[in-house]
Length: 190
Image 1 (cartoon, rainbow, N blue to C red):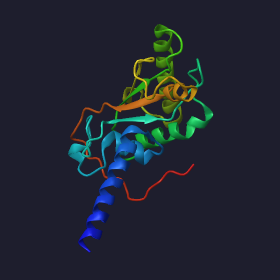
Image 2 (image 1 turned 135 degrees about the vertical axis):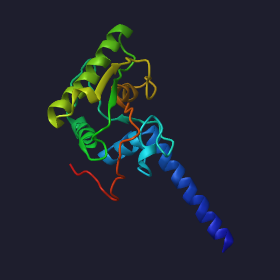
Image 3 (image 1 turned 120 degrees about the vertical axis):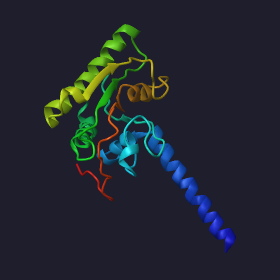
Protein backbone atom coordinates (compact mmCIF):
# COMPACT_ATOMS: atom_id res chain seq x y z
CA UNK A 1 0.00 0.00 0.00
CA UNK A 2 2.80 2.41 0.92
CA UNK A 3 4.65 1.72 -2.32
CA UNK A 4 1.46 2.32 -4.33
CA UNK A 5 0.88 5.67 -2.59
CA UNK A 6 4.51 6.62 -3.09
CA UNK A 7 4.30 5.75 -6.80
CA UNK A 8 1.09 7.76 -7.15
CA UNK A 9 2.66 10.74 -5.37
CA UNK A 10 5.75 10.61 -7.62
CA UNK A 11 3.55 10.37 -10.71
CA UNK A 12 1.56 13.44 -9.63
CA UNK A 13 4.77 15.43 -9.00
CA UNK A 14 6.02 14.44 -12.46
CA UNK A 15 2.76 15.55 -14.08
CA UNK A 16 2.76 18.88 -12.25
CA UNK A 17 6.36 19.55 -13.27
CA UNK A 18 5.62 18.70 -16.90
CA UNK A 19 2.59 20.99 -16.97
CA UNK A 20 4.55 23.88 -15.45
CA UNK A 21 7.42 23.35 -17.89
CA UNK A 22 5.05 23.27 -20.87
CA UNK A 23 3.36 26.45 -19.72
CA UNK A 24 6.61 28.31 -19.01
CA UNK A 25 8.32 27.27 -22.23
CA UNK A 26 5.29 26.95 -24.48
CA UNK A 27 2.67 29.16 -25.99
CA UNK A 28 -0.51 30.31 -24.25
CA UNK A 29 -3.72 29.48 -26.08
CA UNK A 30 -6.53 31.29 -24.22
CA UNK A 31 -7.14 34.36 -22.07
CA UNK A 32 -7.00 32.43 -18.78
CA UNK A 33 -3.56 31.03 -19.63
CA UNK A 34 -2.38 34.47 -20.71
CA UNK A 35 -3.50 35.99 -17.40
CA UNK A 36 -1.96 33.19 -15.37
CA UNK A 37 1.36 33.44 -17.18
CA UNK A 38 1.47 37.24 -16.94
CA UNK A 39 0.02 37.74 -13.46
CA UNK A 40 0.45 34.41 -11.71
CA UNK A 41 -2.23 31.97 -10.60
CA UNK A 42 -4.18 34.45 -8.47
CA UNK A 43 -3.35 33.18 -4.99
CA UNK A 44 -2.96 36.64 -3.48
CA UNK A 45 -3.32 40.04 -5.09
CA UNK A 46 -0.12 41.40 -3.57
CA UNK A 47 2.03 38.84 -5.37
CA UNK A 48 0.37 38.99 -8.77
CA UNK A 49 2.07 41.97 -10.36
CA UNK A 50 5.64 42.31 -11.48
CA UNK A 51 7.86 39.96 -13.36
CA UNK A 52 7.51 37.01 -11.00
CA UNK A 53 4.12 35.60 -10.09
CA UNK A 54 3.43 33.45 -7.05
CA UNK A 55 4.30 30.29 -8.98
CA UNK A 56 7.68 31.65 -10.08
CA UNK A 57 6.56 32.32 -13.65
CA UNK A 58 8.38 35.03 -15.50
CA UNK A 59 5.58 37.53 -16.22
CA UNK A 60 5.86 36.95 -19.94
CA UNK A 61 4.00 34.84 -22.44
CA UNK A 62 4.79 33.72 -25.95
CA UNK A 63 1.79 33.99 -28.21
CA UNK A 64 1.24 32.16 -31.46
CA UNK A 65 0.64 35.47 -33.18
CA UNK A 66 2.80 34.64 -36.15
CA UNK A 67 3.51 36.44 -39.40
CA UNK A 68 4.40 35.58 -42.97
CA UNK A 69 7.91 36.25 -44.26
CA UNK A 70 8.61 40.00 -44.61
CA UNK A 71 5.14 40.86 -43.28
CA UNK A 72 3.76 42.73 -40.28
CA UNK A 73 0.17 41.70 -41.06
CA UNK A 74 -1.29 39.38 -38.42
CA UNK A 75 -2.08 36.03 -40.02
CA UNK A 76 -5.77 35.14 -40.06
CA UNK A 77 -5.20 31.95 -38.09
CA UNK A 78 -3.49 34.02 -35.37
CA UNK A 79 -6.53 36.25 -34.75
CA UNK A 80 -8.07 33.94 -32.09
CA UNK A 81 -4.98 34.28 -29.88
CA UNK A 82 -4.82 38.04 -30.49
CA UNK A 83 -8.47 38.11 -29.38
CA UNK A 84 -7.56 36.06 -26.29
CA UNK A 85 -4.94 38.68 -25.38
CA UNK A 86 -7.53 41.44 -25.85
CA UNK A 87 -10.02 39.56 -23.67
CA UNK A 88 -7.35 39.04 -21.01
CA UNK A 89 -6.44 42.74 -20.96
CA UNK A 90 -10.08 43.85 -20.74
CA UNK A 91 -11.15 41.24 -18.18
CA UNK A 92 -11.77 42.19 -14.56
CA UNK A 93 -8.48 40.59 -13.59
CA UNK A 94 -6.36 42.11 -16.36
CA UNK A 95 -7.94 45.53 -16.85
CA UNK A 96 -5.17 47.36 -14.94
CA UNK A 97 -2.33 45.43 -16.53
CA UNK A 98 0.20 47.17 -18.78
CA UNK A 99 2.27 45.17 -21.25
CA UNK A 100 5.25 45.39 -23.55
CA UNK A 101 4.74 43.74 -26.94
CA UNK A 102 8.09 42.50 -28.23
CA UNK A 103 8.16 41.79 -31.95
CA UNK A 104 10.51 39.12 -33.29
CA UNK A 105 11.76 37.92 -36.67
CA UNK A 106 13.59 34.89 -37.98
CA UNK A 107 17.28 35.16 -38.87
CA UNK A 108 16.84 35.66 -42.62
CA UNK A 109 17.71 39.15 -43.87
CA UNK A 110 19.95 41.78 -42.36
CA UNK A 111 19.77 42.84 -38.71
CA UNK A 112 18.66 46.43 -39.38
CA UNK A 113 15.76 45.30 -41.58
CA UNK A 114 14.73 42.60 -39.09
CA UNK A 115 14.72 45.05 -36.18
CA UNK A 116 12.48 47.42 -38.16
CA UNK A 117 10.16 44.58 -39.22
CA UNK A 118 9.91 43.25 -35.66
CA UNK A 119 8.86 46.70 -34.42
CA UNK A 120 6.20 46.87 -37.14
CA UNK A 121 4.88 43.48 -35.98
CA UNK A 122 4.57 44.66 -32.38
CA UNK A 123 2.84 47.85 -33.57
CA UNK A 124 0.47 45.79 -35.71
CA UNK A 125 -0.68 43.77 -32.68
CA UNK A 126 -1.00 46.96 -30.60
CA UNK A 127 -3.11 48.60 -33.31
CA UNK A 128 -5.35 45.52 -33.47
CA UNK A 129 -5.86 45.47 -29.67
CA UNK A 130 -6.61 49.19 -29.53
CA UNK A 131 -9.07 49.13 -32.43
CA UNK A 132 -10.91 45.91 -31.51
CA UNK A 133 -10.84 46.06 -27.70
CA UNK A 134 -10.52 49.83 -27.05
CA UNK A 135 -7.47 49.30 -24.85
CA UNK A 136 -5.73 52.54 -23.87
CA UNK A 137 -2.55 53.15 -25.87
CA UNK A 138 -0.69 53.96 -22.63
CA UNK A 139 -1.11 50.34 -21.49
CA UNK A 140 0.70 48.85 -24.49
CA UNK A 141 4.36 49.61 -25.15
CA UNK A 142 6.12 48.13 -28.18
CA UNK A 143 9.67 47.06 -28.96
CA UNK A 144 11.31 45.32 -31.88
CA UNK A 145 14.17 42.95 -31.12
CA UNK A 146 14.64 41.51 -34.59
CA UNK A 147 16.32 38.12 -34.69
CA UNK A 148 18.24 38.55 -31.41
CA UNK A 149 15.94 36.48 -29.16
CA UNK A 150 14.85 33.35 -31.06
CA UNK A 151 12.31 31.08 -29.37
CA UNK A 152 13.57 28.05 -31.30
CA UNK A 153 16.39 27.36 -33.74
CA UNK A 154 16.21 29.11 -37.11
CA UNK A 155 17.69 26.04 -38.85
CA UNK A 156 14.35 24.83 -40.28
CA UNK A 157 11.47 26.56 -42.05
CA UNK A 158 9.18 25.55 -39.15
CA UNK A 159 11.60 27.10 -36.65
CA UNK A 160 11.83 30.31 -38.66
CA UNK A 161 8.01 30.50 -38.84
CA UNK A 162 7.78 30.06 -35.06
CA UNK A 163 10.29 32.87 -34.50
CA UNK A 164 8.20 35.36 -36.51
CA UNK A 165 6.07 36.18 -33.47
CA UNK A 166 5.09 38.62 -30.73
CA UNK A 167 5.92 38.11 -27.05
CA UNK A 168 3.98 39.82 -24.25
CA UNK A 169 5.72 41.01 -21.06
CA UNK A 170 3.83 42.29 -18.00
CA UNK A 171 5.16 45.77 -17.19
CA UNK A 172 2.57 46.72 -14.57
CA UNK A 173 4.23 48.73 -11.80
CA UNK A 174 1.49 48.87 -9.14
CA UNK A 175 1.32 46.15 -6.53
CA UNK A 176 -1.61 47.66 -4.66
CA UNK A 177 -4.30 46.81 -7.19
CA UNK A 178 -6.89 44.30 -5.99
CA UNK A 179 -6.87 41.57 -8.61
CA UNK A 180 -9.45 38.82 -8.09
CA UNK A 181 -8.46 35.22 -8.73
CA UNK A 182 -9.87 33.66 -11.89
CA UNK A 183 -13.01 31.56 -11.75
CA UNK A 184 -12.43 27.83 -11.92
CA UNK A 185 -13.02 26.01 -15.20
CA UNK A 186 -13.45 29.09 -17.38
CA UNK A 187 -12.51 28.81 -21.03
CA UNK A 188 -12.82 31.00 -24.06
CA UNK A 189 -14.74 29.48 -26.97
CA UNK A 190 -14.13 30.64 -30.50
